[in-house]
Amino acid sequence: MQVRMVATTPFTDQKPGTSGLRKRVQAFRQPHYLENFVQSIFDTIAAPPGAVLVLGGDGRYYNREAIQVILRMAAANGFGRVLVGRGGILSTPAASCVIRKYQTYGGIILSASHNPGGPDGDFGIKYNTANGGPAPEKITEAIYAASKTIAQYRIADAPDDAPEIELDVLGDSRLGDMTVSVIDQVSDYAELMESLFDFAAIRAMLAQGFRIKFDAMHAVTGPYAREIFVNRLGAPADSVMNATPLPDFGGGHPDPNLTYAHELVEILYGDNAPDFGAASDGDGDRNMILGRHFFVTPSDSLAIIAANAHRVTGYQQGLAGIARSMPTSAAADRVAAALGIPCYETPTGWKFFGNLMDAGKVTLCGEESFGTGSDHIREKDGLWAVLFWLNILAARQQSVEDIVREHWARFGRNVYSRHDYEGIPSDAANGVMKLLHERFAELQACPEQGRGGAQFGRLQVKLCDDFSYADPVDGSISTGQGVRIIFTDGSRIVFRLSGTGTEGATLRIYLESYEPDVSNHHLDAQQALATLIGIALEISELRKRTGRERPTVIT
Ligand code: VG1
Ligand code: CO
Image (cartoon, rainbow, N blue to C red; front, top):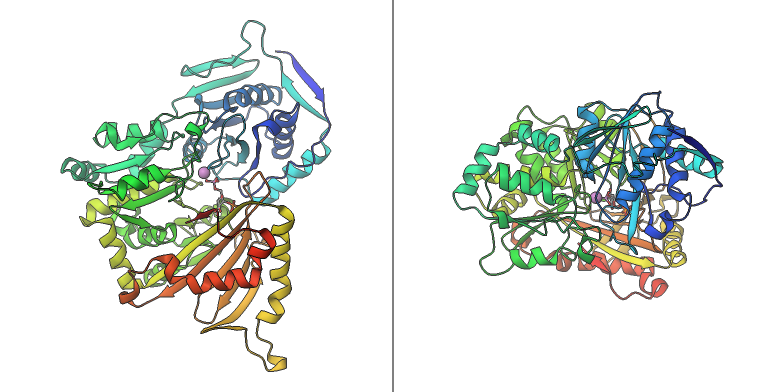
């Protein structure tokens, strides 16, 4: 094996965002772009010679080419073995599962998650550490720093007789001193799921005619869903739709929400709808849960999973605690209080949950962005959440809607919505955020001047700040994680700029109010939040500054 040192110059834009480095495919295709970032990862993590790495992606366009390059770079950088999902494919939760099960040094996951794929779409890459979770900020920052000074990378030449490393046949092959092990992408993960949930009870429910529809959105979960729902649980084959992974996700946005998963939504809201519907995203870590004619918000889903965990095989021993990202509703906090366990509030992004799970402080984690998971791995996990719901449904023998309404009746309802303004000019987005910061003083109470918080109708501002987080395990501080405007009645508005987009800026507005009164629980969230929405638009001057009349996506 011939190892080459290739001279290169840094790119200035390789700063990982909320979940790895995401750019247009064209950006990744620039000469040296991918190689620079991968070498920056290897230089930062300084794996010992012979270390084992996991490698796989969501199958999007450019996945296979990138894997060929990364394998040759891993060989040149002294790795002893790389475990690759067959065809170069591993869902994000499956990659986390494999890293943990085989105790590898870490893993590289190729995905831009819910972002569109194809030659004009997005690509992404991120590094996960030995616990199976996304690298914490101190590592992603070190990778970024390395990318700014990189001068060369190491890559092995492909042998003349085998320019492509075989990815489609299970088993081992050699690349110089390194072994490439192509592993089944589904089996380890499916086995883990079977250990956590009561498959017999779910199978019995399905056999009694309970109908499910899972939308894989032409993304990575198709083969996983077929194996689990159809082969292992006995659901009819047409229970899984859009099950063939495509490099461009069939031209769609592989984002499981009411806007982008509309095909599934129409089925669940149509005549003769199934009892349960669910969808997952590009890389399989997100989930959307639907009942017949009913949508479960991700924040409620986390709370309901927590409140029902004692009914589910893998969680009967109890929960250590719950963590949710700051913009996620406080529905889970109420369950945690009732269970007498702690609830942690972290910045957006799964990387902040890892320390809490490793330290045994939390069992369940969730984000409002259709992400739910537990300490079974260190990523959010779409199919896990679907199976958790199916297990609850099998145990309770009630409809999704009845379970949610009973939950609200007991805990009250945290009415919730997120409004996304996608692809707005960065200057306008930054201007909105700056304006909000400047308004803190006028919005907040000023006891010296004998003035209370700003009043908007019956709502009064209690506090506003830019959220910062001190990790209770390692003490690291993360600042600037989102502007919060909290009212005295507990309602709140959060403004945040997305860290996963690749074009312009995406501004997210998160809206939440608490409704204890059951007679108001039937209200549509947009109706119930109308006052807060109006306040958010007023204080941010969003329409004037962005020229947008309405959000791109409402969830
Ligand atoms: C979004 C979500 C965040 C999630 C992240 C990665 O980030 O809001 O909750 O962790 O995507 O999810 P942002 O910075 O765009 O708001 V995934 O499924 O794209 O890996
Ligand atoms: Co994802």
